[in-house]
Image (tube, rainbow, N blue to C red; front, top):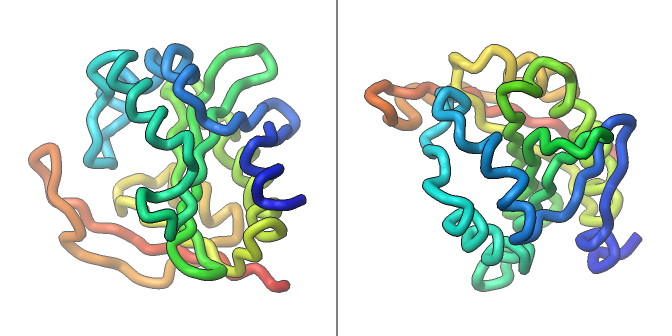
Length: 182
């Protein structure tokens, strides 16, 4: 599969469609993104409106950074029941390396959706972009996310104390990495 075909292809897993993120996804993702409690371990806050979210997604539709040096790849997670479950993203920052992130809506958490999505996505990213190493940064308090990446084979490579400060607290981070063989 080539890059152009991949970036416009909906990926399938057992219970999910991973749809390349488009502006029209704002309407179905907004409700799930509106729960302030879901942002406990990340510095972002819920979007203020569907229109603001749609504007953000319009910018992400190019799937490239403004200078085109990085791939910014985002997918909406749509359950086989048609309900939005969250999103996943991969940002290729360097040749053969990418950072991953995921956001699963509160009602869908702890049901294996993030693992299922990443199990489907990482091998394809490996194939299409020749990614040999994936990275994830996780707040040390986010036990569920730590367990997720460890279940995917990621290993903790370092701890960064006082990595960030948001919502009145200091955030320490673990940096995880997964190296895939060719």
